[in-house]
Image 1 (spheres, one colour):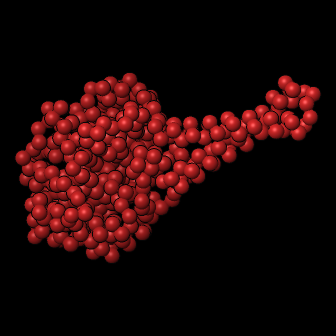
Image 2: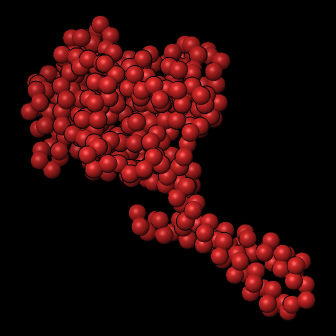
Image 3: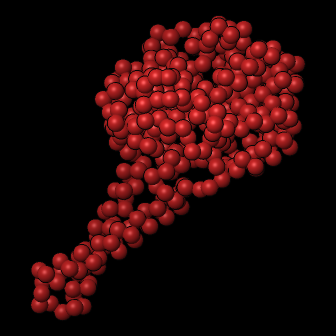
Length: 362
């Protein structure tokens, strides 16, 4: 992290200094015409270096603590000051995902890709008002594309879950649940499920507080599973929480794989594949191309928030990893199916150019 910071600030300083040198030299020649050339060059270089030294750290601070009143949900809460010692920590990206789902309910037109009124209650009236006050910014193509991805992954996971329930699955594990709302708006077919939300204690405490403030009841078929991999493996944790290892399980792992190393991803795949036939996992992944050097990319924002991306896969690589772990049927959500989910609409949400959502069944 320190090396990346030094490299980023150093690169910005160099670019800024080089860009500022020509105008500084012109200003020297215009306002101090009768001085020697050497003096002009030295003065112009000094001005460029001095301004570049201010621009570089200021630019980094602008990335690290962006004020985004026009894009609520992309990084909500960033720039509001440090967290109080008594305030539970929570993932900034989880808050952003909840805000993007809520934005769909508040500013997008029909048809709904995902009907999620609970997300609006979770983010609260202040954030809802911000979203409604800046709809044009939320329709900016990068933010709209991210919102669509968030909606499609939940929609596809819930569609696959409905099929699994029809086939007799009665257990659902949501890995890295964050502010996921399925359990609190579950359809009639979901009431036969035992739902397990897996996350760190701090995130669960924050979520419970938000649910309480919103007046949202915790359903009887939901179990919170605290994850502490230093004490127990994920499989051992799930079994201790009440997951029946003799029965198939439906897993979701949305927006999580990118934060796992390749080895941790393989462990996850093998763990899920070790459950009985009929078990399934729906997960998202990030492509193998890198945008780390682009300070405006989503990966750079996540890294600046202290949540760096650790793994990337091509579709072929991921399919190979899943097969090696023991999965039989592997299905990537197609662009055609995603287009069908998006439907005919007039709110600026367009079918995605790339879809990186996959289902793997045992």
